[in-house]
Figure 1 (cartoon, helix red, strand yellow):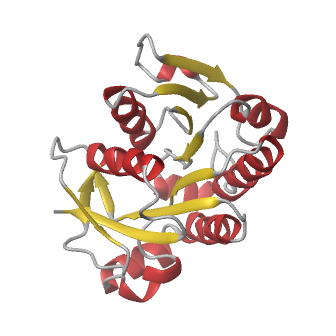
Figure 2 (figure 1 turned 90 degrees about the horizontal axis):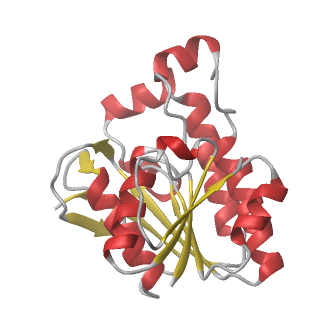
Length: 217
């Protein structure tokens, strides 16, 4: 399967690229700074582009079988809250995903898997109080944009899956508990396990049209 990863140089994006390669897929890693990917492989193509530019996204989407979106802001959350993002637009999730959806419709690509976050959409009411405070005080702009991103995906008409991981870590653990009903067994999960789930969601029809909470198994 030919799979495009949009946002490939973030932690989840790199984990997804590695999981796709391990599963034998042909991978296109889409990133503004390809040198930050740090991965080379025979079945890996790196596409330099900006998710905020529809033309870049359209060229990358053409010829793919599926698209996985792991867009986000990697800057310090407190600094972003105080002075805004220096390197990445605050609406990168929604606007970038909107560009992906438009390109997929144009080129007839159906399968879309998008990583958002636990605590928006269907899992908003399940968020622990401490996390609700963090969302409200520190991450409010990013959360609002993630909510817009989810609406774009749900209204896309594509074969979509929304993946909602809890707090991401760099642990080596690869077991993940996927819950289509929004259950979380804790508030941490490894990027590696999230990457593996995103690949499984792209390969399978099991979760199409579902929002899936992800926590450590």
